[in-house]
Image (cartoon, rainbow, N blue to C red):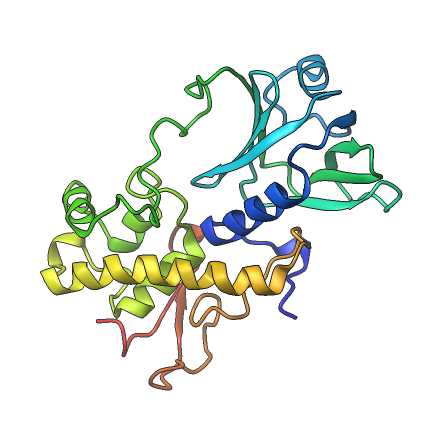
Length: 278
């Protein structure tokens, strides 16, 4: 089924979190939280009393996504912001289901269901925001446009790209350029566009930039479709087996058959085809 062991998870990216957001809007919006339980303190960037008092006996009105952050709006002026980072995962289950290792908090609903957050390495972050001032959250204010936003035109994409002279994969994963793309989908976008990940931005032709823009949107959009079909409401799983090059080093390229290359500069895996990506 392509479900990855939670001990070897990759960071959730835009397609994963977009599908999770949609499931949560369907499953937990308008539900009142009957009980809040905090189990692990390391991920919280607010006091426990604040977290419990602002949420318990209140209802979730909407779940939003901004880049790699999930935002839970409540019927007060409170918002919970979750940045899962590398090992953070979310779960919907019954109250009596056994807790996963390193579950950090749980919200219990009157209908016998729960929403939980667990984190294998405690790298994720949980924030509590009052009102609409999200500026205290690191990186949040600097996020670039959403890649699938209808307002992100080719012209705007080209203009923003001019401000980033470095290697193209680093630019794609720079959240100030575009919000939500990480290591895995940067590899997939560049493979689809036929662009080598270590090319410097000034070396890209106008045609290549246009391809990069279109494949950024199409690769992410297609991934959302696939994940929507395959995840269902089991939101804690990771499904990456449909990716064409990422983490497939040594396997044949699905286009030309050349062995996929895999390197790890700065301990970050980059997968690409030396023949297809020029």
